[in-house]
Length: 178
Image 1: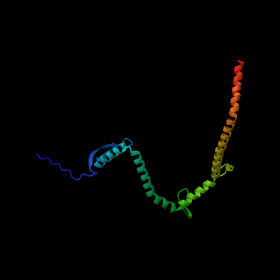
Image 2: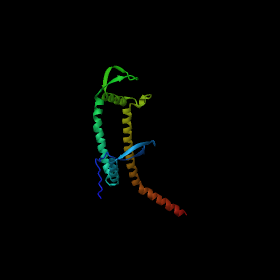
Image 3: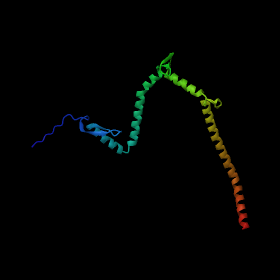
Image 4: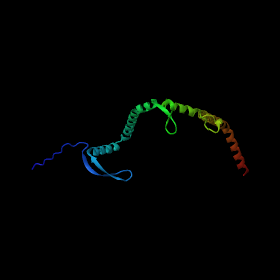
């Protein structure tokens, strides 16, 4: 008795199971499972169990990010260089002047740096002045704290022996009175 099995044209796209799956909202939808799905599931299962998985995952994420940046970069460059027409609040063109997005960004950055930090109290200075002032204050505070600590350590070292002798004498005098 000869049993002959003939399986022709099986590819990764061959459907081997049909059923239903649920989406994030709990809605049921029909889904098919292919040979490729099963192979991919086994590969993922083995990869995740491997000790090298975290470094591999990080490397794949890094490559993905590089590829996304490379694909998006031309669109960003074009958007920065393409002229933009000034519009009113309704999106209608106003005037004939055009600027590039790069020029608009630079103008906004300049405006932010020179704009008062508080529109109602100009004595606080601009955002740039306030930022510089805060950084200088933080640097001076750290430097002064370090200098005070050094001085305190020096005084404690010099006075430590005298204070210890005075405390010892006071304790001895207190014990002698008992």
